[in-house]
Length: 253
Length: 316
Image (cartoon, rainbow over all chains, first blue to last red; front, side, top):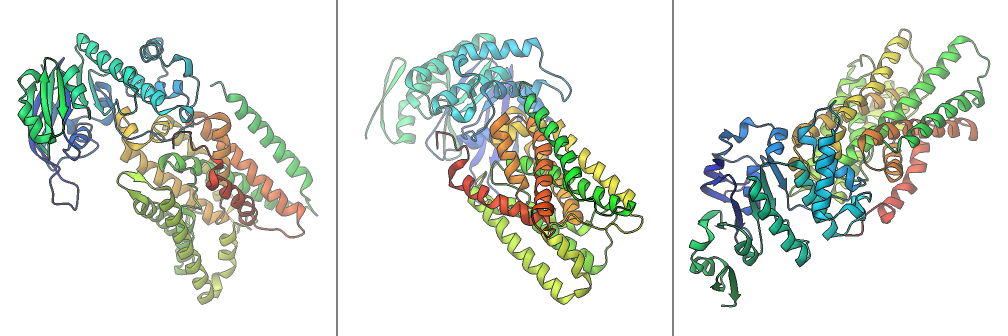
């Protein structure tokens, strides 16, 4: 099943002639684990924002579950896409629990209060992310690493079929980094589709099934990681690359 | 809902405050017109504090800036210009809503918002600066008009300082009561949007990922806060800092959930306005306008917030 289909997508910021996304097309199947990689300015975060309707493309189409993005209301979209932006969260005097309840917002109505099912999901997400001990604290009291885990818990609470994450590992310690990526791998078993933007190419290669390599608004490669030509990585990232089974080694050129 | 106790305490103190106010403030020799005058003043004070405080809380969340206040970000200033233009050109305000005041206050908040926005983030210092310059402009403009059009002097001077002792003309009593009730009811719309406001207070990208239509929410927030602020300006004038002080205090005590924050801020604002009015009447031999008292209280508070008394978190 096609979950996301992107056709001839073009985007440039208003008043700016340079195209950030230069007519890209690709499709993602249900249950795949895609890592989006590429150097700074490749257009990865712009792609994230386009899929989430935060930005409107100049031309081209994005379809989610066979329906055009423009036919979705923001709330409907959040029901099927558990997204995590790379933007830092503002200092907030919401508690962790109150924030996690917001994760159920797309599934709620104005006069519909949270049900037992919702609270079970929240408890479960807290357990998975190991944040139970500070669930009553205010968000502004947390460290960056704790906050990152709390935000990942929110995406789990949101319970979409697609996980779309922009640099979720940025503020995580190495143990939590590995934990997150293996947790995401396990979600695959539940037919969840994972699309994750990663800065760390080695990490992306180790955990993802498919690699979407972007450079200057174009797709250089999209497909199984085994078939990725290391020469292409060398060209895009301007480093020397060695491939050892499931790992990549990088050296200065 | 654990923190409802604070709400209860605030309501209780508010009722007590109103009683003490009615008891202490001299009723003088009282034919019924004076009674009516006192009643009008009391009601106006309460609704002004209530509205401005709630608007401050909403703007602080939507702009993600704890310094946002209808007065500081220029909404009040814009309304002032509009109101003055309306009075001079003879566009009568119906039901105390001066249409030009509403238009100019909306224009101000939109202008300030776009001036302060840089790359998807609303910059704290730019927001306050833009508001400040709109205020400079409005006050200069209003004074210019005052000099050139002496006829409208008195009414505008009242409005300039936030003078709640308005004298209703014949037949204005019923419209006044109606508009007051409307002002008390409008924040219910914000309560229906409480979750969306919670989300946007975390940042726009975060709110989008949670499923909030951010543009629509901002439109509603800007329109409603400008609308109600314009009415308060037309009625009682430019009263600043209530929307800065009360929401910041309340947020620190009961947290940031708008379902509780907004009602608490509303009642707290009414209480502060009442207190300011009480000071102006009882502690000084003159009847000082409300806006002067709130500014005297608000400016030290503002400085305290600026130098880091606010919660800045331990990450930045």
